[in-house]
Length: 201
Length: 124
Ligand SMILES: Nc1nc2c(ncn2[C@@H]2O[C@H](COP(=O)(O)OP(=O)(O)OP(=O)(O)O)[C@@H](O)[C@H]2O)c(=O)[nH]1
Ligand SMILES: [Mg+2]
Image 1 (cartoon, each protein chain N blue to C red):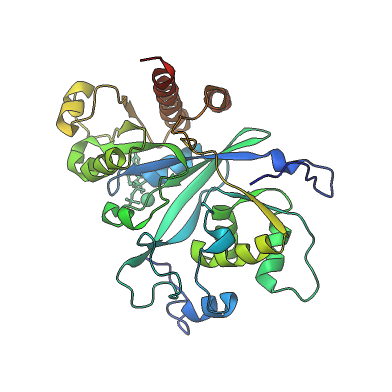
Image 2: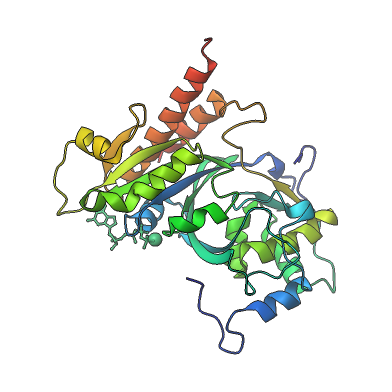
């Protein structure tokens, strides 16, 4: 929507502010909430969403006896990139089986970070599959827990069947700098993809 | 998975029904709203306005995301979207969607934007 030429009563040209969104996905208990909390400038908040089957009947009141609708909570945080750009982080609901209900879940996102607990690789299979199916660019972040074995990253890449070009990084979701580095890796990955797309064939 | 609510209205639906006049959203002008859409008030609240409309205008003097607004007002996205569509239609708020990963031509985000995000992150 065009906001040009609109000045706030205070004289602030707030219409220049833009936002970008990044999704934090991954299986149950992989550290999504922890990561959002570590990097957010604000106290993380929760927003409630009603997942509705694509193009569902909008005349019906939300959730009433409709099996195609379900309510989920999303943790989110934000990072002020500069005076006119804000990055929002959204932790996806753990129940990936509901994602298909949410048409716009990844639509406006620059990309996603898929968290993996290396002690339970299988809990993030579904999230990775969904990213690929919905063609969302992503990086895989291995959340290292104290009792995690030190598998070589390449072994995990094989086990999870992650494509060559998708970065896989080990990190600690409780640590701000470490979580920030994962975001940086995602943006680098997006830059590379853009550069490849721009190359003449 | 849904948040606990007042026992008198276990599902919260009655309250939502009243707030929205029974409309469900998002539709019309609110159909493209995203959780990361920024909302900005362009007019002051009017006397006699619905309380939630007034709250939205008050909180969006500076741009605020739909998700934050929902969290502050304790309203789920769909209900908030209905209230926002009223304000959008009346020209009382502006909405700006997040910059998407792809433009209409399928091109990825522009490099200048990604550089901007990177330099912001590196300052964290
Ligand atoms: N040691 C260690 N513990 C972690 C790390 N990240 C998260 N935890 C702990 O693991 C548990 C699960 O983390 P959450 O952030 O709640 O995981 P989640 O992905 O949001 O979980 P759900 O929303 O339930 O799917 C919490 O008790 C965290 O304190 C980490 O990097 N290292
Ligand atoms: Mg969580």
